[in-house]
Image 1 (spheres, protein in one colour):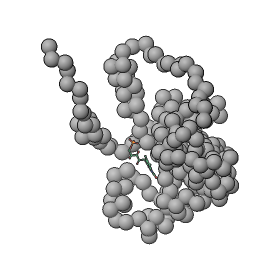
Image 2 (cartoon, protein in one colour; image 1 turned 90 degrees about the vertical axis):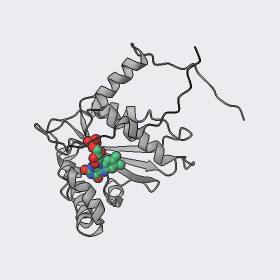
Image 3 (cartoon, helix red, strand yellow; image 1 turned 45 degrees about the vertical axis):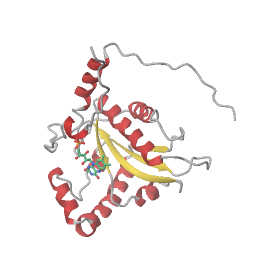
Image 4 (tube, helix red, strand yellow; image 1 turned 120 degrees about the horizontal axis):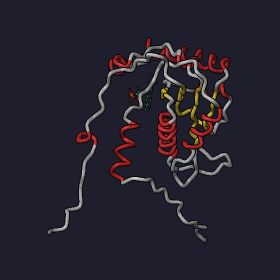
Length: 223
Ligand SMILES: Cc1cc2nc3c(=O)[nH]c(=O)nc-3n(C[C@H](O)[C@H](O)[C@H](O)COP(=O)(O)O)c2cc1C
């Protein structure tokens, strides 16, 4: 079978050394926080389209791009999603959640109240395709969609917007309310908007580099 066709790489060359550019990027992304309280200030559809375009540039197994981003600003639909989510959350918090899970959630201040589903100007419900739209196979779909969502969150942060990655314990209601076809499986919900004035976030720690990174460096050549 013939390979290709191939085209020249449109290489991205930032102004600045890799050391300074990567340090600058870290300064930006380290300020990303999950936000659970949103301002009423609207976010344009054009902005959301750009964020989804950015997410859609993620690498994916065999370039199958196994994702769908359902973007909702309709208040009635957000209210329906909130009502269904809170029904699931009530079950989770009162019956399904094991005690250690509830203990881990405690510092974050989460509860079965999901007001952000109505307050955030946009909800982006992300679906993972288990088959392509043309019926062909997909590969590493979980990894691929996770990478796309990561890009979406960073693109939103870069635009001065905040997000909340929301994972209801049971997500079937997302498919039903949004009438998605069977080959699309709900993956997670991203609430998107400007943070509420005076918004507080949990005081959490990030692991230091020496706890997340292991280096096997090439030995420098002998002088
Ligand atoms: C896969 C995933 C699922 C999450 N699910 C929820 C959720 O259901 N509800 C919620 O309030 N936060 C959720 N979060 C947000 C995390 O609690 C948050 O990222 C974490 O506490 C670190 O805080 P930070 O994002 O501000 O750095 C989720 C994050 C990820 C990556």
